[in-house]
Length: 327
Image (cartoon, rainbow, N blue to C red; front, side):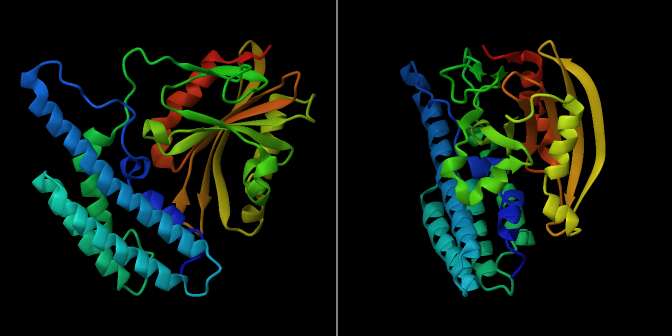
């Protein structure tokens, strides 16, 4: 077996964002005239079929991750079973799919999963047959599963009283991104994932509902009422993944600081590129910091990998452009 967490990384790399996030958030097309019904029905059926095959893939990933993180000594057997079960499910779904190309893709992916279940390393989700199968599924389902915001969808204002996350600052969110307040008291077992030195995550904005693999996080250091924004960022980076860096498993390259003004306040920004040697995974992050009466605030953009950075950058830039201090 590979090091713990490999399945998590491989799953996100092998499974497209469309497969991992599911169907779009728009309502099915409702034909206004009798003659339009057949086209609308075909489109809706394609979306239903894509969501079904994507859903079984998500279930497979969840089962594999659970098996890998389990304390059970025979996690390999559990992963093999998850792959075999998926192959059976996928073949059943393929028989009901109306689109010949999607049906053939589902059958090929089922065969690849069955083959992987018998392989020496059943966690190898980037095996050629499985990787090409998920890529083909993405191509066929790109239209039906790509989330889109309906015209006129309002932009959410985050941070104000009554919003999903009440913060020392407020800013606009790109439509479909989903914010969630972080209560560290309820996440004691994984609290270390939401802390960077004196900074605690107060809000995580998830990009998956918008079809993006990444998030925007807002951190607050309530004890930091003085100091420079750049100094806050330097402390933030020094605390991030410090154990992995000390162990020599993580390198951080291309650290670039910029001093600027955000929301009328002195601020600083940093872009940096961590490389995880164990996972052979390249990331690229950006973050900005500023002082507020309620403590120093850091807003960090964290795509899954460097390849997704450009896709998620608009949510970060909008936050910078529209940020104001909370009342």
